[in-house]
Amino acid sequence: MTRYKKGKIVKGNITGIEKYGIFVSLDDYYSGLIHISEISNNYVKDVNDFAKIGETIYVKVIDVDEKESHVKLSIKDIDYRKSKKSKNNQGIKEVGSGFAILSQKRDEWIEQKMRELS
Image 1 (cartoon, rainbow, N blue to C red):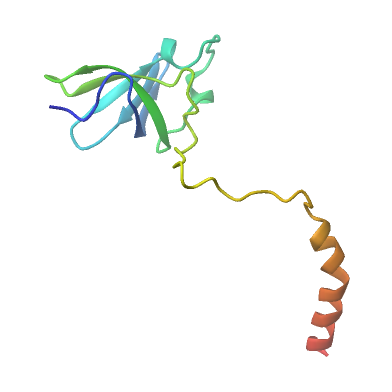
Image 2: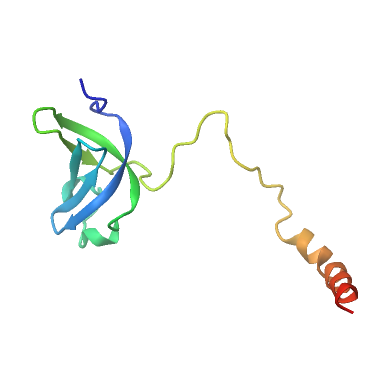
């Protein structure tokens, strides 16, 4: 039984790009194709605009051929370049001050460094 199920989003590595789609390796046994029609809901003029060989992306499984160890994949309607965030890890919260703290401290830090260098 494969770990790849229809509808599941998994990580893969881009191994090839052709006019008609993107080849993705999922593991040592399974590989797949993102057909050009599964790249975007909009017109795709050049597949290379969406991926680079060697890039690791997330893909959605749309069909699995167990016999051939081949998976049909899609990146439509998913954020394929972003990693999945765990529910416990919400990331760093912004405080709204932006670069203001750096700007306030800049002169002080310059003076301190000048004293150290003298």
